[in-house]
Image (tube, rainbow, N blue to C red; front, side, top):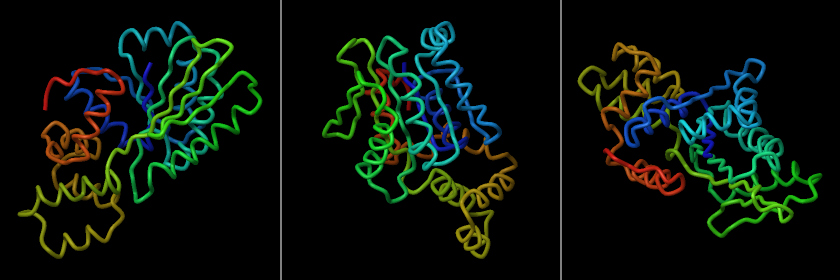
Length: 243
């Protein structure tokens, strides 16, 4: 089973639409944590730890998408907790694919943080072993029973942030509608806030804007987008069938 863990709602919607378009997953299972009593993460834990629910999602989809509340939360709390809760309870290989905005931080630095936080959660599990490969992939396994195995792999979604990339593309699409003065103001604003205004100019909401960017192929020629598609196809064994 592949579990995609992303920073937030916008990232999760973007990935969902990407999988729908390029791999023809028409009904991607997405869970979002809105910060209210941690319902999102509890729903995900419930699925992974309930055999019948787990088998349903594995058989019908092969993956789950989960969006949390920021990079720090994912690295320090969400992933370590999921590893702790699921290791030794799912008798097959479970992949946690962490997809984060790059924001200037190196993959190696983030993986070091992930590794250290996971180790803290596994310290009281005597049969848990952890190895890190040269390409920054964590392998968590049991020498006692090799069928229990977790792989943690980090991918970068976009350079900077998804919202910053979307703002850039929106301004290109609306260059006739947005004056130079408006453009300067939008570039000075926080990307989320600027995107809300740009979505209104397009007559749509934020979710629709994110889906539109994928459906219309705004990023199809971007190196990061092409690389992300290739990595997802390779790691998850998904067949890419459209551009």
